[in-house]
Image (cartoon, rainbow, N blue to C red; front, side, top):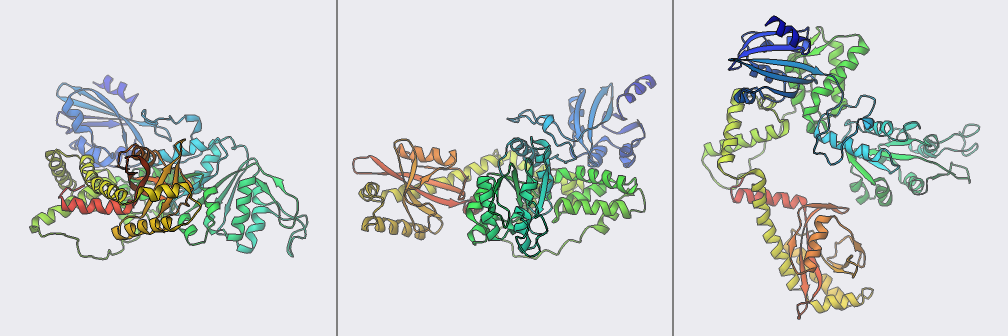
Length: 609
């Protein structure tokens, strides 16, 4: 057995021998800090407890049930990837662990476009969650082109790091990366900072003039952070540069071309700013060529242990420290909401690395530096009908447990945030899962049932609307769209009345179709955003249902997104007396309305989703 153990330890870092039930009989390994931080990895402990203390997934019980050798990957709370091999030997098990070195997870085999190793950022850029893998995929797609990129996300999510990663991975990596914080430059200086100036352009202009950031970024990338802070007069000049790639310094009549890629970033809603007149609409669309949204840290909980480990290594090296975090300390960091996102997390890790009196940071030390929870305002529960008290308590409990599992994807973390024991959490969650299985209706199917109910009603509204619109008025409008006559005014009033009467329809419109299959807006209610005669180009979800309506089939789209927002649309054909389809009528409903209807129907039909 000693030879066997020695052979395995030449390959693996840690060996744990258990009986058939997972109770630890022997634990041996190299000087590995990870296993020394948990008591459960010693003789008398349990392999299930080891998993709970170290890993975000619990697989040991499933492995032992199959009684077969199995090799799999596990992600630790400290940010390591572990290769685990479980060997069944007579009435015992040998569990072998090996730390895998590397900065990036392998892309899954089912991705439509594989992420190539050559396009991973060469500087540390922690990407461990699915949402951030999607971000990396988009970054890889744009890094070899000069298309303008707009990075969106809350303050502190890492927008500048993403911009630097695009520069690092792309064909412009040998050129300069010029960052500009548009919100940090005084308004009277920002124009000269961006476009440069010639000598004598203004009173304090330096001798010989100065090159602007656009010129300095030639052959490289210009990163415009906080682009929403640009004053309107500068937005006009920025639009011209983006359109023509030509820069004119202040005080000069001569222009010169620049070869740059522009990456802009903002934590504001530029769409809302456009509506308020605070941001130019044409500039917004110029910047919005390739939008990339970086999710907040609270939606990337599975990434927090890796970020902690990355920052810990950084500050241990910077301050000559050897600090580690216990699994409970990592847990506490994972369940914090992080309003300041990655920047706040880094600050906390740095503070703990500096101020820790010991080499091990525990949960109590983390609690001391984390901001206290703000007291939540109490509100009256929304209950539509009376029910037994215990049933109401069970309902709230189910919702809390489901919400916690959906956010944290871990029984251990969900139990901590709900402040119940892990066995209690496991038992209650298993009960919920069994209840769902007994109902023979998955969450996806439940949502489908509710959507079908909503779609039936929306389809009926579209069909009724089409029936009350006189086909001859539509035909008259098609023949002369440029003439505003009594028929068109009457039709517009009728559509507006329908929209106002229903109260939940955002827009009611009529589209015709050209011989080459283009959708043309004929007329709509008074609030519609598309001009008469303008072509509508939408996503496939909308266009397919519209074409089906022109073939005589009324239908409802799934929720889709176009340049005007996120919608669900019902469409029906308008027919003349001979049964010929002359146009289609559409009713747009906002995504927020559809979601509220889903909730209302789920309560009414007692189908919880």
